[in-house]
Image 1 (cartoon, rainbow, N blue to C red):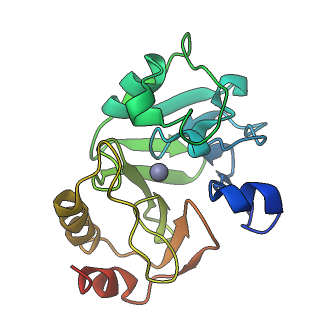
Image 2: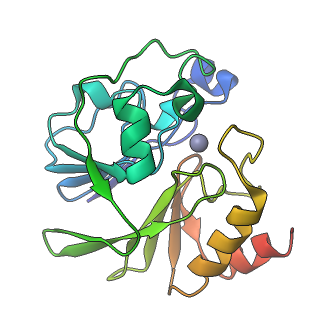
Length: 198
Ligand SMILES: [Zn+2]
């Protein structure tokens, strides 16, 4: 089962521009946005530590995985990496224990292998999660719909690293992209199109 919250369910939050998606694949979840702690899952993988993607993390009862940098940011409640106050969230993650992920790690869950792809750019701690069996990419804020590039004006952003990350993603056989905001869509040379914007 793949479940997503679309981008039209809460007008107020949309108006703040911070509504993020969470996905559940079997008993693994990707991200834990506000008011939607993933339930009945065994593992949660965080795409990056921006607060709109992790606001309900303190209520998660499953194992939580994140990149080494995101783990550090969350456990230390580092505002420059989390942007919680900036995004008007009143949360504190100190006391949480996160399991570290690095590039190439594979998390097995049920019949699926979730491969971790480090994709710095939008933020230094960003990862994508590649489900090779289906060609699905859970992209966090590395890829947005509608040919928009993600924000790279944030404290740990790098437009140069974003371009490198897109080139790295081109080496995968991605068929469908599940972005951190907006609706999922077919790849169809989408990343090549993004690269033409640099
Ligand atoms: Zn973000």
